[in-house]
Length: 219
Image 1 (tube, rainbow, N blue to C red):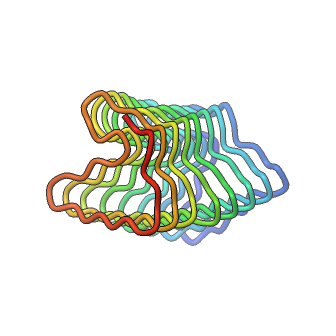
Image 2: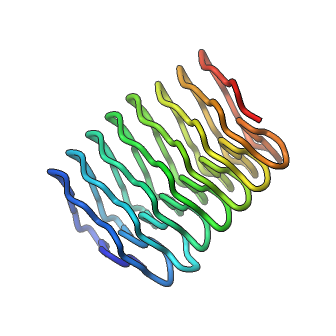
């Protein structure tokens, strides 16, 4: 795992000043970067994680596992990555935490399974805030933009999920099992799916709360 960078234990890494992690390949998860254990990674200052590939694992761009914490902020980008599994851009699993803020984006990533842009599983926690976006991502299966499963929690505030596509359900977002999704003051627009739930698809005992938001133009 971790084709370009492997960060574990209690290590702390900051990528700043337009740093680029690109063109890396790994057979497992985290094509560009993998954070494990109690590691902390901050991607800021317009830095970019792009063009990385995870073979059969999750997270073409990056994977956060265990109790790791990853922050993407300051107009940084995770883009044009590919996963042979789930989470074309980002894969978050276990008790890992992901924060996307400061007009940052997860875009134009592809997953062979679910979650073209982002896949959150286990007890993962994800926040997307501050004018950030997930757009142009594609999943061959479900959740073109975001796939949330098991007991994972995703909160999207003042941000957008638009122009994503899924071969199966949930062009924008899919929430299954006992996972939860909250969308506040945000836009879910122009996403497409072949099966249904162009914008949002909720199944099983998933909990979804949408407040003061717009869901439009999805098919």
